Image (cartoon, rainbow, N blue to C red; front, side, top):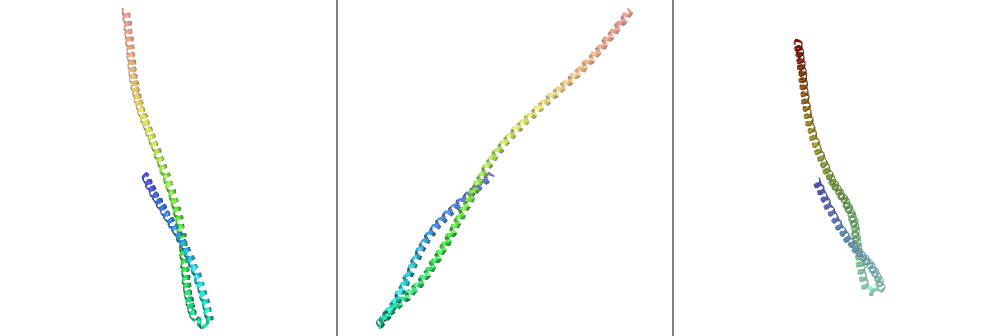
Length: 222
């Protein structure tokens, strides 16, 4: 069990390290995206400035055409040039509008990427915290398992002591039983000896009585 816990802790630790490393990489990418957004905003300002230049150029071309018309025949060449300038200004304005749309699209994509990246970082940090909580829980389980092992060792030691005491008690009981058996045998021997002594006393009394009877008979015949 301890080996399995250690393997799990090592796996979670590697996972947490990997998530932290990925989060750091995403934060670095987010910083790069922020710089890219700054550049995009600068380009947007430049494009808006060019749009204003195109509008002003078109207005100047219109003014030139008006002045050329007032000049009559002598202003025809200037009128042609003004028309060309107005045409170029219109084309430039259209191109600038396209560039503005492109820049807006790029900025929108950058903003979306920023949101996704920020959400990804939050999710990664949350996942890292969850895994750190799992790691801490595994530490507690490991500590509790160690405490349980110590308790089991103490219980085993106590059980061994109890078994040893029981063995000693059993040996004492056997010794007591043997002593009781010896005492019982001695009692039986004493009882047998007492019975034999009683029988001998009875036989002795009978012999004495017989001798006394014979003595009386001898006195009578004398």
